[in-house]
Amino acid sequence: MPPSPAVHPVDERLPNSQLAALGLQHVLVMYAGAVAIPLIVGRALKLSPEQVSLLISADLFCCGLVTLIQSWGATQWFGIRLPVMMGVTFASVAPILAIANNHPGMAGAQMIFGAVIGAGVVSILIAPLISRMLRFFPPVVTGTIIAVIGVSLMRVGINWIFGNPFGPTAPSIASPEHVQWLADASATSPLPKGLALVGTVPNPKYAPLDGIAISALVLASILLIAKFTKGFVSNISVLLGIVIGGIAATASGMMTFEKVAKADWFDLVTPLQFGMPIFDPVLILTMTLVMVVVMIESTGMFLALGEMTERPIGQSDLARGLRTDGLGTVLGGLFNTFPYTSFSQNVGLVGVTGVRSRFVCVAGGIIMVVLGLLPKMAALVESLPTAVLGGAGLVMFGMVAATGIRILAAVDFKHNRFNMFIVAVSLGVGMVPLIAPNFKQWMPHGLHPLIESGILLASLSAVGLNLFFNGAHYDRDESLRAAMADGGH
Image (cartoon, rainbow, N blue to C red; front, side, top):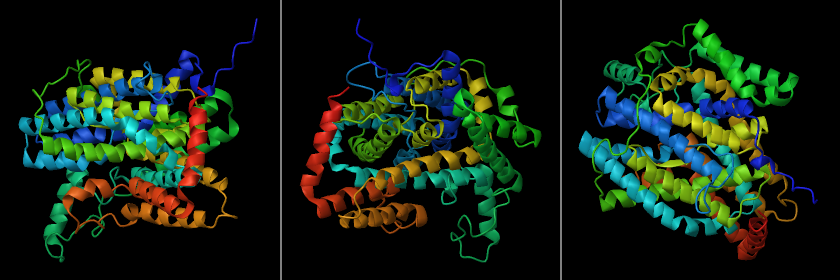
């Protein structure tokens, strides 16, 4: 009897107890980002607290549902079948807020969900076209993009530590108390009205020493567990570090449970609770442009995961993954939520744990669905302070950057000095939104969603410079290797 072929680590089915713990680890890492956008949009639409809670439950439910489709990959058309967690993309915030500000209330919500559904349908149709861009991503391009992804994510992790999960340049989506404090400070500031920006006056809730101490405790715990333990315990070092940080936060009074007591035990998520969507062609076009940006970023994420899991990404794989971005966005609009993409935070977790099984994220998807149906459990996870996640963020996001550096280490810089120009310039271009986030203030607002992503700018720069310096023949070689890999599984 011939031996059965070895199972690739991506397709390995771990024991259920391990899957549950590793899946929960992924959920805790992405949860803050998953619930942020429903909170932001709900406030902008001036919805009631009950309606905002509805948005959050729907978002968690869809996060889980789309994660199952992406990681499990039950059909030949959808699902990249890699350890991917899906969540609402922040790239959609700007156009969604523009709609909400112009049309508050139920009408605005219906216009937002109509634009989301329309953009999702278009994304499904154009996914194969975008997947053909794979040949423009040789190692010098992918390594640069993945390094920029890691460095860009560092801003998220650092702001988790210092108490502003959305970054110091986004007062409009900070906490209501923070916004009110800034308004009061602006009134008494000697600066002209409107010029008191975040950071020009000290924020009493920014960078508290107790939060920094807990982040340091989480970081130290993860490093010690990774150093002195082996096997499954080592694989859940991030989860154990977060648990230790949560206990410390509770003991210090930073973590409280009032929201848990007030939340319901069960809440059914049903589609179109805000009424029939309104399909506006201009809004659909705007949201489609955002989805193109999202799909290019997703390409970088998938390539990073392919490197980490040692499963090369072929064109058909990429098309399935990008179609799922579109399908998730359609489902999001139907279930009263927003556009979906792969969460880059979780790519770093794969690098930290070394666990490549996609069924870990399947377990994470099931947990997210359950959280969407059980608001009390969701409120418990939401009670975790972002400072607890900050210590873990440094490790995880640094791993993404390190993966990019490892890919670049195999690039020929000695005999092809042009590769140095590609990496150097693209890194600089990718840092522009990170270092100078207001660089676009004099540009048309319609361009802002397309240029505020450092990952997208670095991708365009790296692809363009590679074509300029190395020509199309270099890309054809990479395309052949990708096609061969595509036929191998």
